[in-house]
Image (cartoon, rainbow, N blue to C red):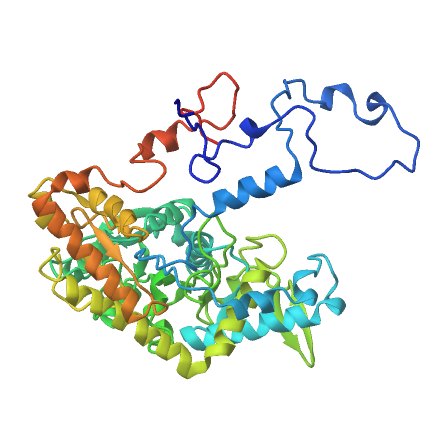
Length: 507
């Protein structure tokens, strides 16, 4: 008796949609033409028509499409399934209420070119969110235009540039140095360079804090335009000398930009404006619980002092009597940085999040985020090397030093976590920590989930000591084993061809 070999299982070895193609299958139906049919030559000039071979466009039925993509969707890890312990990314649960509010017809269906008279509700929402963010940060000037963190960051640096040019005139060209700590987010130097600044790096101390002596030394060298500082910093520690840092920069004639990526540790507890910060960006798609990841969309509002406010992007959403208006009359503005008014859907979700929590709820969320991170930090202390002794804020950082002695490194630990059902933590960042593992549980995670994650990390350490090859060859339970991510990113196969073996191409 022979057993037929099964070459494809509909949920385990899903072929590409191209490979499911069957000549003649159609998944759509067009209405009968109610106008005279025209020749293609009369509709579209030949020089505008593509000439490449379109053979290979999949011919599939509706049920083929639905089942194919539904099956693939079940392979995805999502925040609805479990925690994302990604440090400096604040991957919290996105409340369904926020999604419901964002889908209100008057908001979701509003055309971006609609006149002010027809958009009063949307403009009021933006205005209210601006007011709330000003209160949360302690900085009165707010623009919601920037589309996510990196653009909000660049906007903040552009504000500094514009302010210095207006203040110092021709002499401002001699003030073009931006100081950035060695643990900064990678986009910080890029934003500074785009705004025309030269970057000088500030060393960190053995405690993981900004080196004040080195900061003062760099300020004494002159030409300082400002400082780009993340607080809590990228190793998860609050810069307790923040006021001294701000005073030092101000005394040197510069301004302080704060990267707000880690505001999940401060909202409702401390305000950057009260610390001496001049400008900050926020990530509404992180701190205020809107969808994060997958390439966007995002919202990275820029908040600043009253002195910097005239330079914010236009139009500014303002209240005039009982009406809300778009004010373009700011001659010193850096101009528009985003089409229309920014990613409006993110603003709806963020305001819903703020209103749902209220002042006490926002503070409680912050305290829970810090508590969760410290719980992880204490439970894994001794198992994994801790590069800094200070209590962490919203994220805990570890090194692979203990496991590296056994031949197991950070990437191996991250891959093995997948077998335990968890999305890996942030790996090899920040660069100042050897084999860094940055873990941010957020306030969304309950104790049982935290304990399960901690237990998995402890089990992986035990495996590293007893059966290291189990970790170094992970993951074992995924449909695709360990791949070369660098090669996949640098040499992606983006177009399917029939002659390519189905095991070697990628969609």
